Length: 425
Image (tube, rainbow, N blue to C red):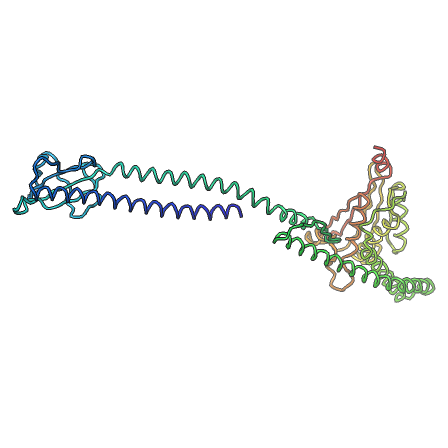
């Protein structure tokens, strides 16, 4: 904006400078033409009156050259050796003897006699042109100085005025989409203040709307979880007494819906953003317990794999990963869970022999609400929950997959010894 103001001012100054130069040039030329006309009239009057002892030219004027030229073009006065001044009836700018001059002429007639030639005058205008050039240089220097000063001042003023807008833009960039809060207020009764107030109201309205949506989602998830728990329990009891595949399928479906409702409840309550209640837990024990819920899943553990974390949340991580792997492989026989204990960290690998993923799908797998399942069985929540819980425990999760070669999800968490060493440090 400061540059725009400066450019506008420079354009205005340029227009004023051009107008000033044009007016000065016209005024200067008019004065020189008047001077030349006056001297020509003086010469013509003296020739007509035949005055004796009077100067043909005004000595105070200077820079004038006078010639008497015959009708044949021969210079009589001051002499034939000089080239004739160009003949112009009206005062005109031209070049004579390689110098810029203003020339004019009047008839040369004897007293009471015929016209025998012309009287020609040339005024050296080099000094006048230099004065005009000096004026242009002065206008240019003044314009550049004014433009520089204006640019500096405008940048300072505009920068000061726009600083609150820059802070607003920064705060808008820093908004948490999960919990949007705009705590920056600009106490100004102008456009910037009105923009800040409008943005603050909009963000607050969005936050309240998200709170209402989370509360409604939590209510729905809670209402679903209670009956689903009963249904899953009843179907499990029936499946244990009867080998009917339909009962086992219904039990598996009810259990998956129950886990999905718990993911929804976790998201709705905002539990992923809450601090983790740390306790010593065995990731190997969690993996073995959760894997036992899925028939055919193989578990390989090395050590107790102890970490500091929430047993409930880490169980949710393991369950979501195994559930996704079983769904990808088609059965638990195609899934292997490995837990390894290293000095600095503990790793959880969940491998499946499913169809694998395209690189773009694998890259977006942890995005919330992203799913490639067209049958409505996936909602894009499980892996998003996994990523949030793992990062809340100070760990990282990585998905490795190629089309036709299955998928492998690797969770890395700080080991118990590493966490205690960091706390001591």
